[in-house]
Image 1 (cartoon, rainbow, N blue to C red):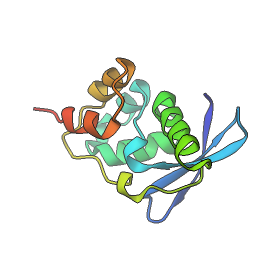
Image 2: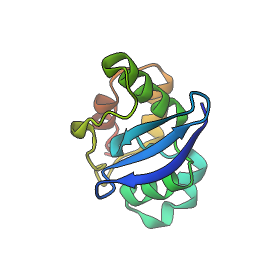
Image 3: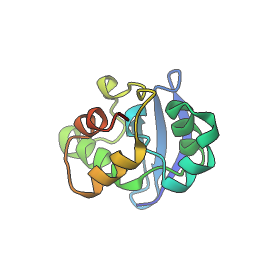
Image 4: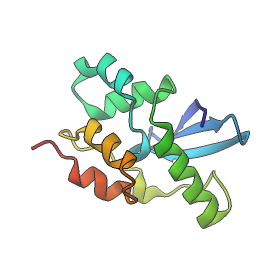
Length: 122
């Protein structure tokens, strides 16, 4: 799962990554741009999770499992990785806990939108 950032689309609502293994572009909604722990720490001074996610996306330092799951969803649902799903292009809440999101994804929870809701910092 090697994804390389290519460019932003429509006011940074989604990112376009290149899957180096499948040699295809994939449209990744903002809510699927979960930064890696190292990148999140690097930009923690920004305080805004959306800015952190954007910077990490531009450095191709986002959670590959999340992007892979989204890519497989697009392929199974539409047979195409360049389909947009505007309902998933939402911004992160200011109090999101990315560590919680990463952990829940690795535990095998399926619905990332539910995970994001669960992972508000309290």
